[in-house]
Image (cartoon, rainbow, N blue to C red):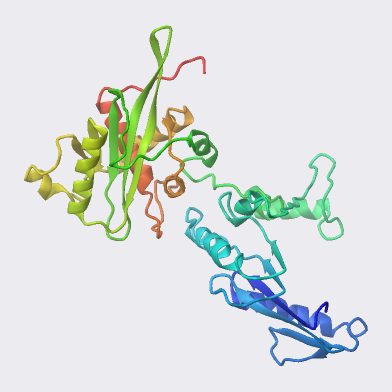
Length: 389
C-alpha cells in the first residue's frame, strides 16, 4: 500500500496454477480480520486479489509464463515455480522455451521489483542462467545443510527425521533435486553432462564455407546424420591435431571446426552443401547415415562426392559407435564447439540410444559425431592418449 494504486502480478507455469495460489492467499487474508481491518474486497473473482484501504488500492492478478505477453506494467512481479519437469527427462525443449520467454518478455516488462522463486529442474535451465547474470541476487537454500551434524534449514517444518523419511520414500535423485537444489542429468543419459562439459572449448571457431582456414595438411573428416522432415540433418567436421613430444606423436585429438544443422532442407540442397564443405575443408572421408536410403538414387547416378561413404544404422552398429563416442569423450580425445543446440542433442540420448523428437532435433549431433569417429578410424586415423595423462 505504498502508492495510491499498487499492481502486482503473480506468475506460475500456468495461469490456473497462479490463480490457485492466489485463491488460497485470499482465504488466508479473509481468515485474519484483525490483521486486515478496514480492507475492502473489490472483486468477486476468487483468483484475483483486489482490496482498497483508506483511498489506496492493491491488486494482484494471476499470470502464466507460457501465455505471457508484454504490455502490463505492474509495480512488482512474483514468479513462483515457472518451470516444470520436462515430459521426458531427456527433453529440454520446454525449459529452453521458458528461458527464452523469460528473458525476452518477462524481464523486459517495466516494473520496480522482480522476484523469482522455485526449484531447479536442470543444469541448463533458467535458474542456472540467472545465477550467471550479475544483475541478479541469487540465493540457494539446500537442506540438509550438513549431513554429519544433521543441521537443516527449516527444522520446524522439515526436521532431520522427516527429511530422511522423505528421502527414503522418493529416492536420492528426486530428493537431491527437490530439497538439495541439485538438478542433475539422469543417470540413464548415455553421455554424462560433466564429461561433455570438459571437452567443449569456447575458444573454438565455427568456420563457415567462405572463411579461409589453414589446415596445414591435417587429416579432416566429417559425419552427417540425415534427418527426416520432422527433424534436421546435422553435419560435423573435425581436423586431426597431432601432439608431439621429443619428435614423436604422443597424442592425437580431433578438433571440431564446423557444425551445421539443416532444418527442413531438401535433399538436393543438403548434397550441394556437403559437396561445398568437402571442397572447402578438404575432407578426406565423410560418413553419412544411409539407414533410409535418402541419397541412394543420387549415389547410383554418381552424383555424390567420392569422399562420402554410406553407413547403415542397426542395433549392433549403433551401440558400437555410441561406445566409441563415449570412450573418446571420456579420454578427452575430442574438442567440441560451444554450440548449445549440438550439446543438448548429444545429451538427449538415453542408455537405450533413444532420443525424443523435439523442435531442435532427434539426437542428430550425437550420431554425426559417431560417424565422424567411424570415418576417422577408417581413414587410418588412430586416437592415441598418452599413459601419463
